[in-house]
Image 1 (tube, rainbow, N blue to C red):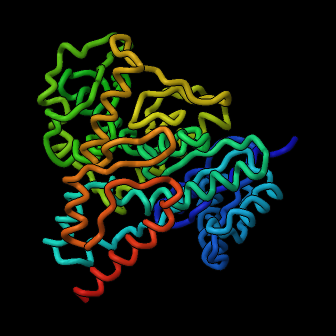
Image 2 (cartoon, rainbow, N blue to C red; image 1 turned 120 degrees about the vertical axis):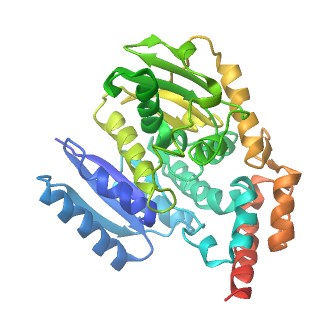
Length: 374
């Protein structure tokens, strides 16, 4: 029987952790990692393989040269390897760059939020999706890179990945634990349904988000118990007694989200989970995952239109003013002003065709800023 083939593109800090977990999934699968540094790919996939073997798994693991900047070459490799599913973790942003700056500068850049840095996250995913379309094959793609925004932007031109991973999903276990503690119930009896964009899911474990746009439903044994909890304090244990590491260390949660979604697809588990950018929608939603795709599963009292409005409001807090029907993105003046003041970079409106040019300019500005403080 033909093995289910999974290709991971971008074996960096996040992609490596995703690959570590994917090769331990149950079933008969073949795993391939693609990137430009073949020696790094070879050694890092060996690490994933050998760790899996220690745990009793015997995955089929390989790697291949792939330059996502080259759409034609990427399409040729995809057509030759014939993956059933692609996980994209390729980005032009680098983990750990902001901490090398003076704290005051790093804090200012953090205050700009993720939105103004969209070109760094969108460029390679856009190129990959063009390569996938060029193959003419129906390939499922999962995007790990800023899917709250990248996926709905690409949806405007018919190139949206099936779903994203991480973001709001990363905090669901802690929210369940918090509800279990507050209601004195076993955590296995507790579930939650969240609707929120990346801004809220990022800050909810760091400060109060009670005045931000989000929706939640708490369940115990499947019964709605939301009325027993206060919106003002629903997340208050996350930055205190349930606090966990964030940053690069916290990528473990994003990787676990990816493994959960991929497992739902390849093993048709119909898993209930959460994900950003499912079916090209903005922000994050509760979903059910199976071989046939993604189903948005909203709380009974919330319509699809209301959920989208909540998430669009959340995107504005992240610096995304509007996503237009042709994929053009408008950025909020307040958030972009921070990058203009700190880096000398200013882009209030970005047509999709300009994303590569904007990414190059933004990288140059970041490097110039970093070099100034070395």
